[in-house]
Image (tube, one colour):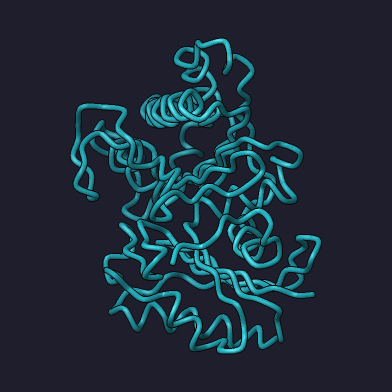
Length: 304
């Protein structure tokens, strides 16, 4: 059996063929293009065309928010897509296949639960700290998409009283912790770097001892850790798996995350909460998307 996983984010679009054991057999990735809604979708079509393999089902992971009933997506970091009918557009490419859509954070969590850092763990949250900050919940060994498909969207929980977030909220985790916002904050504090410097450049500066760069990661990790602690208390979790491009900074991010978790998760039932790096790297979204169709027992009944 072979399954197609499609992972759509604000920075990149990836697609891959995944077998029944969760192994990625083939993979393609392209930058998320600028342009209108159809231009963005054309990048998906190109990835799928190049893979050109018969599959037994198609899973689609997309940045959110989304509407599972309608099959539409409105990613904060893809402004060209507002109410975009992603599920139906993919179904047009695969009229003979089952096509299942889910939030990219949930797919990351499902991938790690299947063959990554969450193997053998029934209650966890997966987080993607990248262009945005996404998340997804696995509860009792099953995906928990929530009423509309957006449960676990941890990046837009509030951990501060300011600043404003593009989602319309105030003080969201994403405003502190996403890669672009890390760099923006560091520049506002006087960090000097080339115009095209990104979170990787900021991490390199921090490793070299730059105080502002270190402060940016401390600030980011504290926000992520506070959100993890609050979510763990709410859902009685035992594990948080953190991935995404910003998480590649390692202990620059994980040390303040764990510090914040230790400070805020004080109730006895979350005293053993663990925070670990994701294991699947850039394949997490693809594997998790494929799991939507490869492991139907982990999925709740889809909304009508």
